[in-house]
Image 1: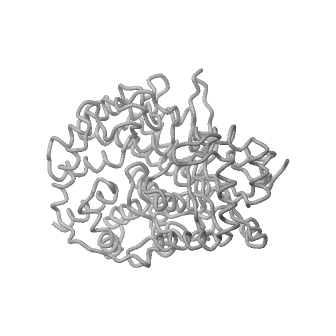
Image 2: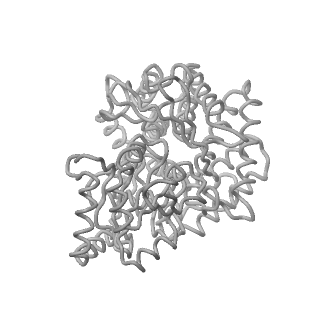
Image 3: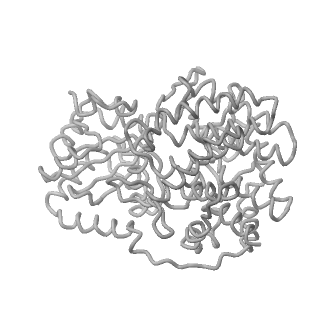
Length: 506
């Protein structure tokens, strides 16, 4: 049967068109239908590159009984996480509050018709998985409880929403002090995998922002242990399976502690940011090995993840070495790649023409596509989020530093001021101005924080233009000071902002 996804452009959403389930996109039509028919909502958020999302599509969603249960008793909404980053971010916070842990894609949320979340899961299979029932039994159980005891479901949902609302949270400020450098060093030394580099067990992620923070700390403290920790990690990663020895580029994560058995997905923003990190270590050590890996990584993005002067979000490498490429583009992801290309052209003048020319062309294309009449878009017709303003603003400033073309500086300042006007609220930052009331957070071991990025832009641009953003930077740091001073590695990019702020105050 057909459903309401026929006008969607997302590859992920079109995969669910003409299926048994009567899917809606996130829309006022779908939300109003739930209210009118007094039905609970089943919200499913994912993306094409997710292995678990693919399994749910091929197994969990194909049975007639599951389709009947969803079509008769629920309003089913399907969301592409990269298109509606605000929805994905918001409901991952909901999941964490309800389950006490983070989740990756997919996110599966049951809501009342008033959008009060009362049950959350990640992957839901055709057989029971731990505390999660099989999909058919779960749907029957949820519907029965909602029909017979809706008030309890509504009460539970309201309780979750109260925790998410930042206006109900008290701020416990702590004095910001340069002693944070000692905390960063001691925590990093304790958490570092001495044998294989990096942090954590399996699955093992790249932790790019954390490594970048250690370099920032090294430049202040000159503690050689920090530089060694970063450089050895990058060397070990580049020689392991997490790095594609044939085509270049880093896979999303490894299934083992020694960087082997990787999930064969590559994300453009991961590879852009880790290329920039390798370039930074090259600048410090003058070891050409790090420049080589950075350039191979950028070349992979150019060869496999670009087209029509724009960069795509993610790709999967199959066992036969062929690639599935999701040709979705977003302002935030593309901006991070372009920034890395500009950095590469600055680092090595021999590659200046190759990388700089491409960076200029793709940046101008991105602006033409997504920044019209002073209105920034995330992708398609979706209004930009804080991360789009942040990453694009940083890239524009890097473009100015690389080309000395003042138009990029003017645009960078304009993007920064627009972001402050749209998202800043007395030290807090909204992630989006949409129907999802979500504020951004600073926790970013795996994905760079939008708050931290916009503040780094403010710090960098203040040295060039006659505009002082010190109060905005300080207030944003002060509100998050308790967490930053105690657990700096949980928010590495924001901790980097703090280090730069404290260094300026010394």
